[in-house]
Amino acid sequence: MSIYLLAGFVALSAVWLLLRLRKGTGIKHIRGPPSPSLLFGHEAALFRQEEAGSLEFQWMKEYGSAWRTRGVFGTDVLMTVDPKAIQHVFQKSGYNYTKKTSQNFMGYLIAGPGIVTMLGEDHHRHRKIMHPAFSAPQLRSFLPLFQRIAGKLSEKWKGELVATGELELMMNKWLSRATLDVIGEAAFDYDYNALDAGGRSKLSTAYDNLFKDIDYQPSNAAILFRSAWDYIPMSLLKLIKYLPAEPFTRLRNMNILFRQYGKQILREQGPEVDAERKVNSKDVMSILIKANSSADAKTRLDDDELIAEMATLTIAGHETTAATLSFALYELARHPDYQERMREEIRAARAKVMTRGGTEFTTEDLDSLTLCVNAIKTLRLHPIAYGLPRVAVKDDVIPLAYPIVSATGETVSEIPIKAGQVVYSSFAGYQRLPGVWGEDANKWNPDRFLRIEMAKQPASVGVFANLWTVAAGIRACIGWRFSLIEMQAFLGELLEAFQFHLPREKIEVQKATVGVGMAPIVRGKPELGAALPLRISLVQ
Ligand code: HEM
Ligand SMILES: *[C@@H]1O[C@H](CO)[C@@H](O)[C@H](O)[C@H]1NC(C)=O
Ligand SMILES: *[C@@H]1O[C@H](CO)[C@@H](O)[C@H](O)[C@H]1NC(C)=O
Image (tube, rainbow, N blue to C red):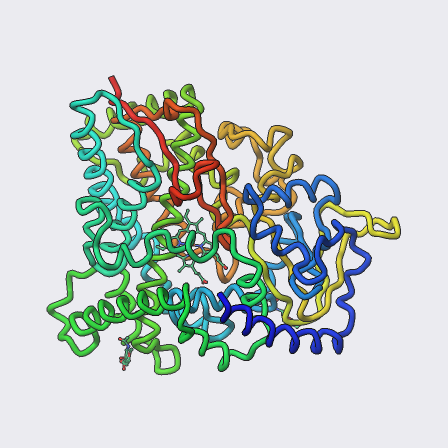
């Protein structure tokens, strides 16, 4: 850790100087909580809050839809839960709001030069090559894979239940292995063998508990060091990769592993392999390789970028889905009535499938399972990405759907900001606004989606049910529909076969903050890592 301290303080002095030279940020008239620390602002408290989003919930009650907090080094941060403001920043402004280096660079260290870390034109280039792999027909073709892996998981559980009748298990760990198997095969035709081997393949152990190890309860030194990245030029920043300390050593080893597999895949499927041998490959990587070879020279990806895409899809695509599904099953365990209604709906649809002589659900069947789709909207109350920061590239004016009162008592419905202003959008907060979701916004109750009229909401936002959990705009989650179909397939399969209950021993599930994300842990037992225990039994 001493290396953090040293580098942190060198950067600190430079930043201090820089800040003294800077003009005011122009949002001083926006009210907000007093800063607990000159150096850390609210940042340390936010990184370490007990329950992801709880500070934001408290502040939105006090200040309304937007308020001012302090970042590290005494900077002003505009925080908002306002639908119009978030829509403006994420959905309407293109690249005029960019990613915050300190967070984006961690993505670079984890996955390399892939789509998540690219900015502006480079991002556009990556997105264009990736796009065909996430088209609707392409995604539909993954359904049999989702169903096969869900079926495999189901068989494993049934095997164990024969002897015991009921079983207590770490739901998130099982689902994480299943979704890893899914993403391996869908993304690059790789068999992680995670369900069979208990997640012990080389690649899967490489990032087991990765986010918890890097981002859970960071030390003050780590927070300072990482915040300083915002002020360091990229060329210098890239050297951080070689620091002989954790987590950088671990990340470096992980990158090396991915590169080995990536090179092998490119050798087997790359542009110089003749077309006939790969006609059947439908995984994302082979589509990327095809898209790359037909793109014009300026829009191509090089080998390193393509390999980074592989790592990116694995990391972005499995733990997110597994955690969301775990929270959905947790809520279903807490709401047995809803669970039973959902099961009835699935049974009725299954009967229809049988009558027409089929065996498996199609995507149309799954979409007709309204109660199931609404249960997936658990994303509202348990957002894996519970908020994101963006930085204004130029001076701008941010509109508000819900006006606020300024420090001088004026009503404010727009907030002018200067270039460089950090705007943090709390998706978790927005998703609990009573004005948008109803007075019972803090309750799970998916039946709200039967009565909510989306058209009457203050802003039509996001890509799914006016939720922000998968972001929106040019950087919307590219895999949200993949994830949705995957969750539909899993819920369809699992609810039909199993009943889900809370564990016998009373526990509290806590949403731990891990960087910009959150993960379930058992309160008082962080040493278990990400953990969401549930009990299952066979449906009678
Ligand atoms: C419930 C599951 C998921 C959630 C909550 C989620 C959430 C998000 C969010 C919030 C972003 C925006 C990040 C930002 O702009 O800083 C994002 C981006 C992304 N997601 Fe997801 N995601 C999920 C599943 C997936 C899956 C299954 C895949 C791949 C198959 C995937 C691949 C990506 C990629 C590649 C990006 C970067 C897009 C870009 O920058 O253009 N995600 N995701
Ligand atoms: C970005 O800002 C420029 C200059 O203010 C503006 O002309 C452009 O329309 C903005 N882009 C988007 C997508 O809003
Ligand atoms: C992308 O296409 C170009 C031109 O065909 C090729 O040189 C390059 O190796 C390709 N990249 C990958 C990763 O396939």
